[in-house]
Image 1: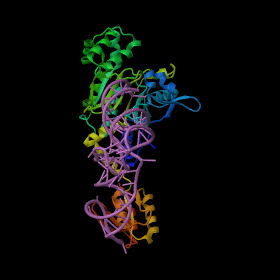
Image 2: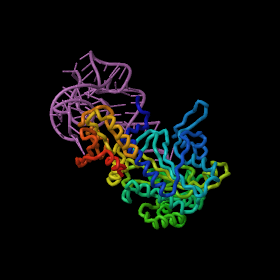
Image 3: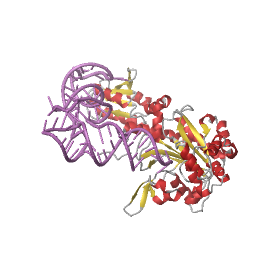
Image 4: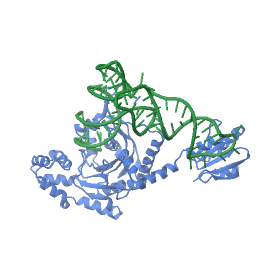
Length: 415
RNA sequence: GUGGCCGUAGCUCAAUGGUAGAGCUCCAGAUUGUGGUUCUGGUUGUUGCGGGUUCGAGUCCCGUCGGUCACCCCA
């Protein structure tokens, strides 16, 4: 049996690496006062149709269930979050700072940094319209990446402002209904040929030169970005951000700030992206709930690639993996007649909270030490001729000493 | 969705159209109470799958599935 395309098995080594990423995500989000939530993996396809156009529906992992409901595996969290918050926003004090880190699905051909099932951290602030919320969210994104040992030489946040573009377009006679089409031309500016961009912009009565001039000198219409930048500078995080108005992002629901995070090397796809979606809750609740909101998503696949590429990040991950090995203590049973005594010792050590492993079936002492090595244990305890004393051995230094059972028990917990 | 390249042992890869192999891993032994080295031995394959050409196909052709890269798109 083959794995379905774009899906992954997580053998223990891979699972440990995944758990490392999850633990840093949760740790840093917690430090920022974000609380974890979750929603269903499966949603009605209408949820995704409601908030954006047909393009997105083409990438959905969707099917008709046995009750003939047209459903989709969640491709992102924002619509679910908007639905949840719109339904019970009165239960929570504003602003809400929520995060989650579940699996998402999209039906696309896989390649580097893109799978059909992936983990994504989602952090959102709801009910706060001020630029302080924008800065707080960006600071969180930065500190999460710093939490992996990545620095200003490794990644950068590129900030842009859709409001600035909306004003720019409005001033040149582009109606609100055509704003998204205009933005998609801006989005493709770097990839499309000059002639092609020029032609598309002429449909909006603009020239490439006008648009480029705005991109290189956006000051007048992007004052909000400036206050966000000031906030981040005060936190000492100024070197992680730069303004780049070519970022507009594809999703229809973004309103003000939008941003993407890239590796400085330019090797990977975007590490994270997000922005403001001040009108989405209103749309989701049919006008009942009006609440400003913003958030970002950060996938595990690209992040893991970048950690692989950066030495410091690699070391930090290895340190974590080392501290989370299978066992701390390996009990070596050198004399099979003492198995009952050894089991009792194993049990006592485990009850004190230590990670303990041992050979389940009779095995040569050499084999047991080999197994001890492989388990990652720092210490071995030999139960044998010395009984009722034990041989306590530090595996790295090969130093041994004789101890009573109670002395061994008193050595744990190890940390 | 479109195109290029690639699918051989658990992994990394060999094999002019002519008997499917090596290294690593794993298991066992050397070593009946001491581990990362070393040495010896052993297990593992419908060569992704299905057709075709040929006396003969891992090798050539077609299809298909999967991987990978680029484009497309991006939550």
